[in-house]
Amino acid sequence: MSRDSDNECRRLLEMTRSELARERDRADQLQSLIDHDSETGLLRHHILVRRLNRLIHEKRARFAFGIIRLDRNYQRIRHSRDRLKVLLYVTAERIKRVLGPGNLYQSDRSDEFLFFLPDISGEDEIDAAVTDIMDTVREFHNPPASDISFGCNIGVAIFPDHAESVKELEENAEIALGVHEEVRWGGFLYSPEIGATYHENNTLESVLRNGILDGFSGFHVAYQPLVDVNGAILGCEALMRWDAPGHGSISPTRFIPLAEQSGPIVYLGKWILYQVLGQVKIWREQLSETLFASLNMSLVQLEQPDCVEMITVAMNSHKLPGDALQLEVTESALMENPEAVRKNLQAFQKMGIRIMLDDFGTGYSSLAMLNTLPVNTLKIAKEIIDDFPGDPRSVEIVRAIMSISESFGFTTLAEGIEKEEQYRSLVQEGCHILQGFLFSIPLSAKEFQALFRATH
Image 1: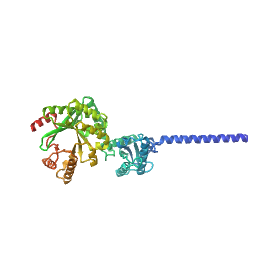
Image 2 (image 1 turned 30 degrees about the horizontal axis):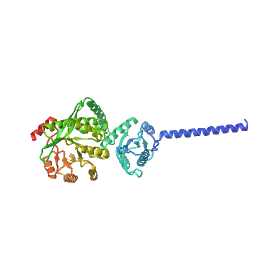
Image 3 (image 1 turned 135 degrees about the vertical axis):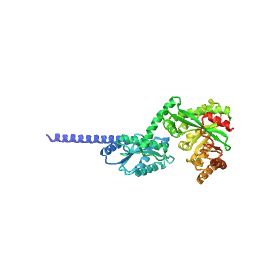
Image 4 (image 1 turned 30 degrees about the vertical axis):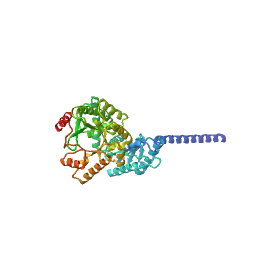
């Protein structure tokens, strides 16, 4: 072979090597894009799955798998895409500092992270890590997002305590996350009891939907009297009851949150509204022109675009004035989405519908917030009344609420009254409206009507 031919071969070989190197670089870059999230730079879900599968196959370690989902406040941010990217990136960096390098991954959801805690010896380690994660996510952001604060909910499952496969780990962590989203504080760690409740709730949800489709079968309304300081009936609180086929009577504290999470609360809310307004119409014609009913409104209902229109149509169809209805709203609903809720409540007030802040004294309302809210009545929570007047702290809380109510021109209502001593002391403190088993348990419409006639 000539020298020229030899040089040509070397040149072609070098070109081939260079081309192969470029192809490898392109392949590496492509693989990096596949393996890393473009906004946070975190490794993606499938990389974590591989890692967990290896550990499970080896069966030599006890570890925790967790899901971090940013809460509703993050989901409501209506700013530019770039701002959301900044917030997500900064949040990921904060959590990485808590968990250490290599233990945080990006979920397939943009508002969710996955994490891994190796060599777990006890649940205290998980508690500490979760608390630190929640604290760091809640911190206010530096400019350009100083006006934004959001938190997160977390679900954790442990191998091999709670699962034998990655799929089971993910499913059980998701179940624990759902519980954490519901109760907000605590309950983030999976347990067999949580799993059993989850699967039972799934069954109840199916029964609930079937009951609605079957003409609201099993649902009825109970009416608990609201009385003045002399014990005279002013109106009632309308309470939904459900006798679920095959499950018996289900507590509202259970089926109402279930309906809120899965969607049927909107249909149930409309159903009870028409049931109650129809009954109030009859009572106003037969018993008293001033009788009214109080109805609970959830955040899910208040956020519906047609919420005001729906209640307006219902009131008009029954030819009832606004003072025939009072709406109860929780402090948590006001805090979750204050602008949307305030707008709807203002519209209701213009219609003459009274607004009551439910469970006052157990939430986070500030005086400044009360000054801007369209509220007519403060409802003192049963938890406070339970210890009143025996507990000096409860007495001080009641007096503080009465003072606030008087300052803002609100009416006060106390619920959960079961003893004469509570009744007399609340009247002495200046409470306007009272409710509880001392006066009456929740009644059917027929029983309520009979009680009203007997006491008037």
